[in-house]
Length: 192
Image (tube, rainbow, N blue to C red; front, top):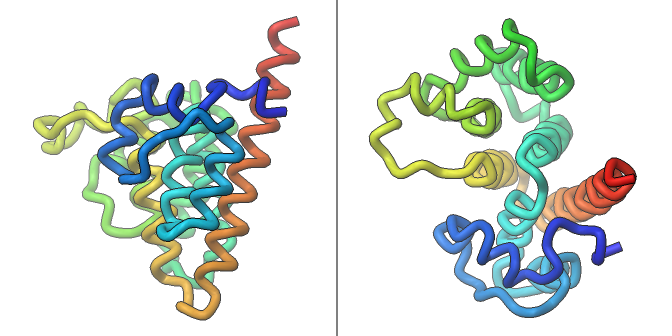
């Protein structure tokens, strides 16, 4: 399956998305992305596997992956985060809806103070930078949506009990890998 991924090697991903080097310290290799990601998960800083998945996935798929990860942690969020999570879910289903684009842009224009806030920011950044243009943060260097996806998932993970954190992190990474493989299949089918 790895041959159908967007990138043949981890190094290819780092070359195509240099911003990833700001979010992780492990240098890329010539390994296939899935193999590299699983190596990160088993390594000294397993959280970098989350980072790698955030960049490996196409942006909209990465936002959906983040939504799915945080949906498993809903008991750790308040009502406004639940509403924002539902908005992100709806946006992923209809990213071209003017109503949802405006709602995501408005939600993303506030500073991301919660894990779900980061995911809304990712959707806004992905959505042609409309959220970035609407915030004071537009003076900051632009980041890809993957940066906010990474921040949101890791912030959510930080709320998980320490005893459960590695198993939840592993489940999130495996979900990201599955989504990358599904995206590869979908892209392959679209090519025909």
